[in-house]
Image (cartoon, rainbow, N blue to C red; front, side, top):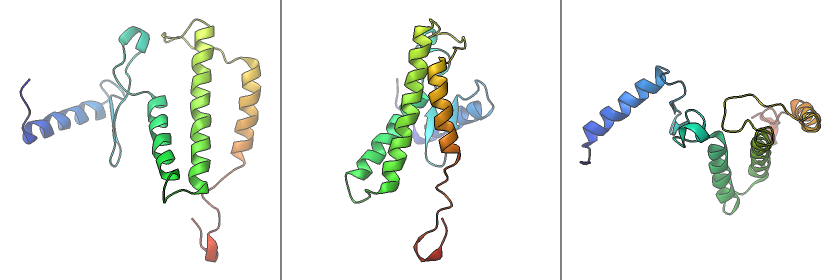
Length: 144
């Protein structure tokens, strides 16, 4: 394969963005301010790995926050974010365990959440619904 010129590369990226924004296939390419994610399309077991999964993005964010915690940007807010992202990964891993146990992993079949897990999840969601961090007062009377 010949290297692409900057113009050809920009054209290719623009075509992919338009393709993704048109929704064909849905969720193919999401564009944030400075991030591009090619999401997994279809089931890995059937379609093979072809993009990022939510777990991958959460793990990457955790790694970045962990880097902050090891340096000058260490703070309690990062610790809270790391814990919450860790809980999100735990929930997604539990989902995979449930799907495997029910024989529906690598399919598009919905799984059933086990009752004991449902109880824990309901309690956690209830507790989290009463928490907000964005409205906390800042020193000096300011608001976030």
